[in-house]
Length: 187
Image 1 (cartoon, rainbow, N blue to C red):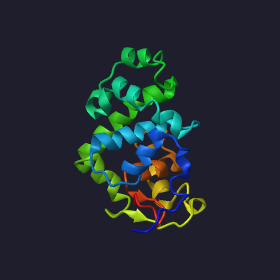
Image 2 (image 1 turned 30 degrees about the horizontal axis):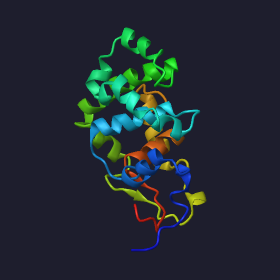
Image 3 (image 1 turned 90 degrees about the horizontal axis):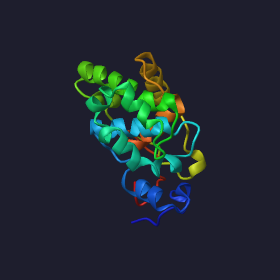
Image 4 (image 1 turned 30 degrees about the vertical axis):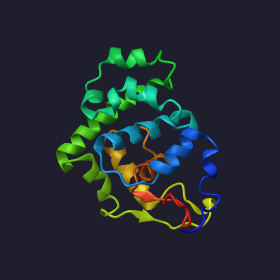
């Protein structure tokens, strides 16, 4: 095994939650619609904030949003969503809280059209993982043609918090993009 490039894990700042995410989830292929929806929601919640902030609230998000069950989130009432605005375990931004239901409803329509959220997402990458084999963190992009196309299509479908940079991070989160450095042992 190659020695681990010291920089691949630098972005998590020695935080055990981010370390576990880097080592076990980040850039790992995942075809589960529920997990993909969870990552979409968490990435959307990170707009304007750090990923560290969001990841430390992940369990509260799971509890508040029915473990990111797409149908349950799509059926949340205004009252449930308003109650979440006073939940200190969440980022209490009305647009982000209500955006979970909005995006869940869009995902339901996508599943009707594509058979699964997974099939829709992977269609943007022609069903192949995109692997940059980067050698330095500074080389990893923040957006790509794929993230731009996905962002544009998601917005057209009425989704929120799906700009091209957030969408690129989402692609990493679900493993469509593998941006572990070339010599990272977790790739």
